Length: 145
Image (tube, rainbow, N blue to C red; front, side, top):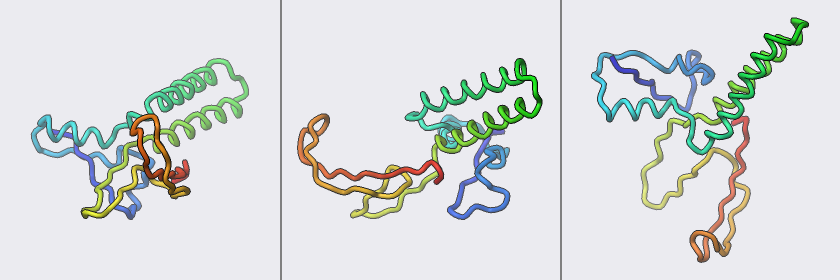
């Protein structure tokens, strides 16, 4: 058996809230092959550009939870700290997850590398990588999207 993920549509159903990745996983009788396993597993992964931040947040949340259970005496404060660490971890997991995207087809299209609002489009002289004139497109990424 292999693990496959259900494709996510733009409209979320009641069963696919986006908060529980396990709801997106189902077992199928298809054989495990390197091509479909890595592709399907990648959909559940954290983006490689966020590894350092995500794993730092995960470690801090884990330590906060352990310290809360071992050293914090009032139960209200203990469970408040644990709840806070779970919420922050869940938020980080959602924020750094690799989205399931299918880019539109077409010749004259520009596909955005991130979800957000375009705040600047201007010509700039790029001197570090391109060393030529380029068009800068700045995108504001809200952590709430």
